[in-house]
Length: 139
Image (cartoon, rainbow, N blue to C red; front, side, top):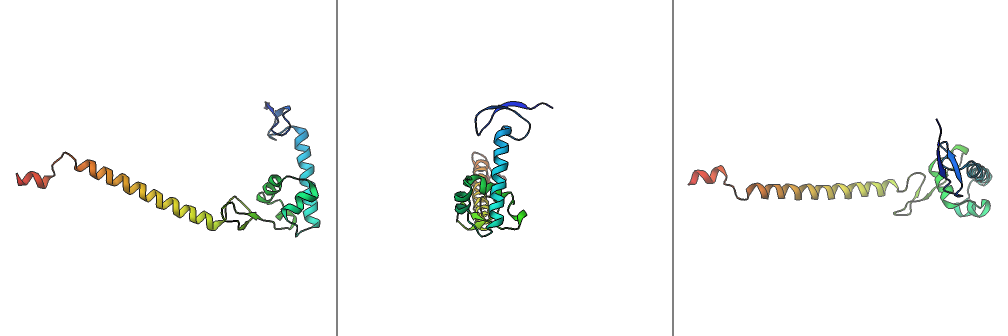
């Protein structure tokens, strides 16, 4: 199956996309950078993200992506990065479990309010302009 002709999102050159989502040169450069990062972290297991950036020249985005993918756990090093909401250390995703639970609780509360408002509107519409059986019997 032939890939689509695309522009590389990193360098802008045309390439045939075969599932790598970047051109072969950028893919090779990324693999080399990831290898450098892995070697540095293996040799310096207590290093922080800023130290890795300084030592390897890698982007913070790449390092965080590698942490999310569990690439450092595979070499025996646990690394974390901050939750986007509270700053707690996490090793996957964007938000820590406690912030996720809080968001779910808030969303459920909002959904309950919306449901109650819709039901109240429906009840109000059903009462407007119509007689109930009880009122008809009075006449």
